[in-house]
Length: 198
Image 1 (cartoon, rainbow, N blue to C red):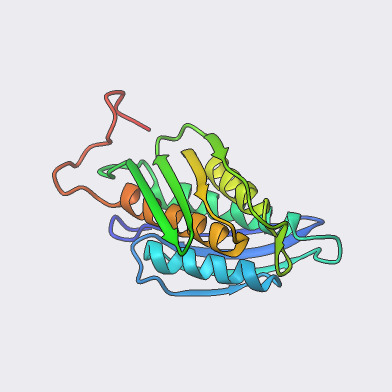
Image 2: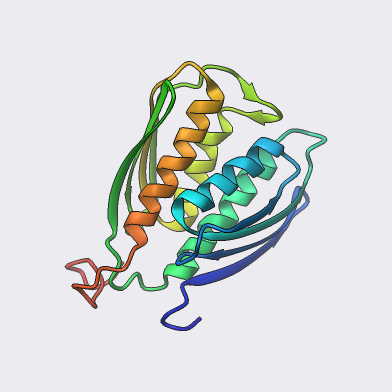
């Protein structure tokens, strides 16, 4: 990876899923996603579009059981890709927060790209599922992403009465916050920490 290409490719194969994923942080929002879960594909494409990340995901999972392993393992790979692509995190902004509405729903995300995995979630989803996507898996997606990317991440569903809107607002707020936090700050060339490393 060159200094000008913050990108990564991750492959993962277990008894539950087989995944190939690529990520370019400084992208155009282009995506090509296939997980076997239509709504999850839509959320990942939305994540890429609103974060201006280029993302490809090809996942073959045990959907005959449920959506858990597919959602979780893709999030693990995405987190690993962010961690690899960011390298030593030199010159990034590091912190960001975003609130995003979608009709009646509002979601918020506060993130620190610090190499310190921590996750908190507040709120509830109004319906149990959206299509074949179990609503609470949006929470699990964010947690798995945070732990594998080394993020301190606080996420919340502030209001809403439609799970589709609540989940989508969460994915979009996460995308916008990560876009902000991973941007390069032209005023600095060092790592944004008094410790000298993240």
